Amino acid sequence: MFYAIPLENKPSWRNPPWMTVLLILLNMLVFWGPQRSEENGRERAAGYYLSSVLPELELPPFVAWLEKTDPKRGKLARRMLADEDNYAQLLDGLQNDKKFLSRLQADQVVTPTAPRYDEWKRDRRQYEAMLPAPFTERWSHDHGKDPEFKPWTWVTSAFLHANTGHLLGNMLFLFLFGFSVELALGRGTYLSFYLLGAVGSSLLAGWAYAGKGGYGLGASGAISALMGMYAVMYRLKRIRFFYQLFFYFNYVTAPALLLLPAWIVNELMQHWLGGQGIAYMAHLGGLLTGAALMTGALLLHRVQTPDTAAANAPEPDRFPLHVAAAQKHGAAMQFDKACAEWRAAAALRPGDTDTLRAWFNTARLQPASDDFHHAARRIFRLPATEANTLALQHASYKTYLDQAKPGARLKPDDMARLARRFARIHQFDDADRLCAILLKTAPDHPELADTLSVCANGLLHAGQRDKAVGLLPHLLRLAPNDMVTRALQRA
Image (cartoon, rainbow, N blue to C red; front, side, top):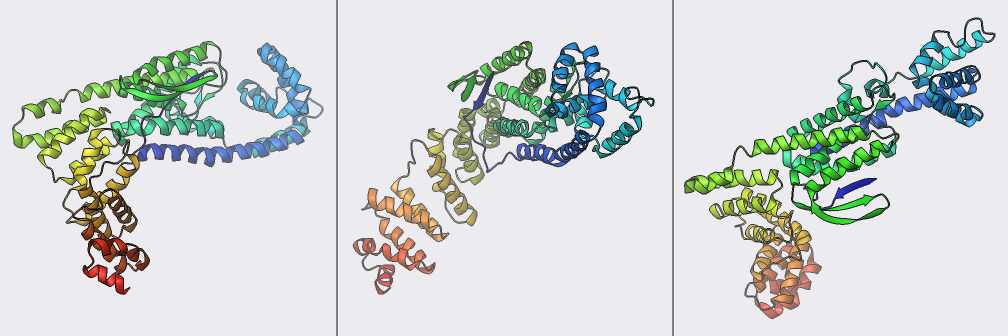
């Protein structure tokens, strides 16, 4: 058993992975909606079955049928028949054995000449009336002999699950890999590739398990396609993973593309070792489909090279070319190159808030990089003449303070400016924090007195008199004749 979970990136909630969230919600809705309703109906019908005469009249012939058609299963079923606690499992096998069930319903097992035929017919009719309309079987991928051709089940089976553990495990991996791929491809292409991954998974599973019985269901094939896309998308970029190999687990930093052959070998080995109950060939089909789709997408992206065109373009045209190159590199998860292009675009239009925001959001994926600190500083130094700019500065400050590594690099001038602006928009906690840092690190800063005065005045007008008075000792030292200082003394 082998699996690996990427730990490198976190989803950006400024550009949320809505399609991934929607897919997760849809899977949960199907499972806890019609699938759960069907399961509850089957449990009620099974309860009636076990309390009727049907087990006594049907299960022994069913076991004899298995001994004739599948001796290995028949031997196990014969042992199970001795214990009534196993009857529910035998009933499940009976209901899924289409040939025996067809003979049973045609009165070829319990014949009209049987002594208890009328009693059996009554209970069998009541049991079948209690069975809910099939939902999971209708929309899952049939691996039986000579199945009905239903190509839509290549996709619909990816939204069905066997149990709660199956669902939650798949949804975890869908989120872990889905948000990165969605960010790179865009929602429309991402959804198309996800569904095509489900189709590729079903096709290989249909070939590998043809005639073996049972049904293919679960999102794991489509999720494996996302895993294949992820590995090809990052290629040789070193990503930090948590991995487990049998009973050993650890962390490793390695090129993402190395995971693709590791995953492929794992699925083949599990399949060859005879793993039961898990469609390893569906996983393999998803991995191969996803890798092929992402390879094609990357080749198409390489047809246009805006970064090369930007170097040779006339000066007035370079800004949009830098932006296009940055977006292209960002989609390919080449964050260093994307930051370089955003930096170049910001140099051409230093006051463009959209460019600075994009540079900051790209650089935050590598919070120890110089780009993250430089982009934050450029945002903090924008003229705050509009409410949108103030909101951008405050949101960027919160993100920067939380994520910057090894820590924030704020100069005293920037802290004083931000404190005054945050006081203007009533973000007093952040303004007060910046004032405290200034008092400790730059007690003689020329703008400190004005900054404290602005903050104290804002607190007074906001009705936070106690906090404003807390600044009075510092104002008495720095600006004893200031109007706000005198107002606080009177207060």
